[in-house]
Length: 324
Image (cartoon, rainbow, N blue to C red):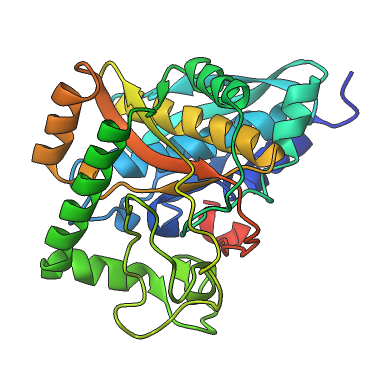
């Protein structure tokens, strides 16, 4: 039986939710707390107007927050009761979550809960440390349990296609002022005290290219920002793509939950993720990938998984900023 009250479980869930990953570390969520439940809402003011017109990446980010909250509530000894998109008249309310029956957290849940603040996004190559196939398969099962499909991309030709499309999308976006201004909005200069966006200390100043090369966002906007190091990690890691059969709001939230389950499981075993969503932000390239590489399933996230000795942290907004 739990030694914590339902109110303490809800507080722990909200505290944990703000540590979820989000595109550009926008943290596009707010939490409303009543006596009985928590409301997870989309903060549309933080939506990427140029690269995320439909709000797909925003809802994936919020889905990651929802899984984080579920995990924290389980760690507090309560089975979460969740409703997805509970009110058609309130499209900004993505989910409600409340403590249900008391239930002791199992070993896996405690393992995931221990990674909520430790997990962080990587923005460079990986160390030349192989990831066992058996472990990758455990990540595939983790995604499946949340309603998404994680596919390790093993064929060299398919990896080359993904890298080439990422490069093409990055090059096109770099010529578009709307995309550039959006990246600038969420890039933080060295020493910035902002608690959102991507700080200069969270990526290497000159990352060595992987082969094939998966370019990272150009957060430094030619300012020479970034931390020292990053030249010694050049391995590409395991390229993986998360897909769903449908492509609506429910599937995007499910993608976020599956993604966070995968990321926390990976983090618990010393594996980090680097994300490459550039090609998925261009409708023509995303549709090409859906038809040609993923058998009609909708690609939601492109990532690389690997081992890194980078322990740079990413800031989070204080609770007072996200709590209504």
